[in-house]
Image (cartoon, rainbow, N blue to C red; front, top):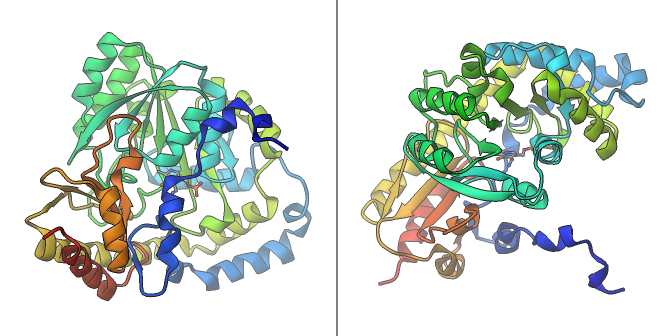
Length: 395
Ligand code: PMP
């Protein structure tokens, strides 16, 4: 059968370049700074076991049955309590449970993006979001980032000239940028959305993994205070704080969008796995999540501090980076022109891989950049990796 039978749509997406590059990272002796996955040693397997036992013994009828497309009402209530802690005021009616943030983005793109609609993304941005908006045939525009996240002044110039449909942003502890949007820019962004009537897709998987005492109020929370709640659609997930394999996330949205999202959810997979929802709800009921988040924060912060120190020592004269305030990623830029995609061949032969930065751009990629994920790497290996990177530099 010929591949010409494939749809136009699927021909537009290519196998993830990252996945192709990183297939070597499983090789014996190679230290991977590439994969963006949570550290499995930090899964609360004991708590998950308790929750699963309760799901099976107390909730069997629900856990094994079809459920509502918008998700388990009790889980949606629990999500509203988590949202309140983050400064977001919502009711279960505002929330749809999804099979993770990736599905949330896919559903939102299908609900809201017509071919040619302009979607603004950060430079750099989350690769799999680019794939989703590409499938919806969006037209991309990009806005730069610095140590305070998206440069909203650049966006302000753009919206004066071009009509845009939406901004997609990971404002807190970004993937891949590792940076966090400042409070002033959060307010500026929400004010712009209100003034120019565009949507903000606020993707927030990482905000609980906070290394500081500061709170970073979601854009959705600012929008509620600024009379712009209808402009912000908020997505989050249990993937980084509980278990990505459970595949449970959610969308918090304005009322006008709800029934469309529920219809799309129904057409996509009827509903998120009832067993996964029951597991998640029972886990939340154990009350173990705050301690679990505390452990993840402490462990990732320690790794991040160690990484920053060894990078400074080994490569400080060559690389510039912003110290992450939380999350799983550090973004580094060579101070002089460099091609990190080419360099990967050398570093791989020296036993270390990372993700070249160029894949995280929708246009004009900066090839002198790279993403380092520290979440699953031991401090010893972080130090060794920095030494190997240094040894891989052109002489
Ligand atoms: N958005 C961002 C910014 C992410 O980093 C990820 C996970 N890599 C996702 C969405 C998808 O997360 P989930 O497991 O909830 O689908």
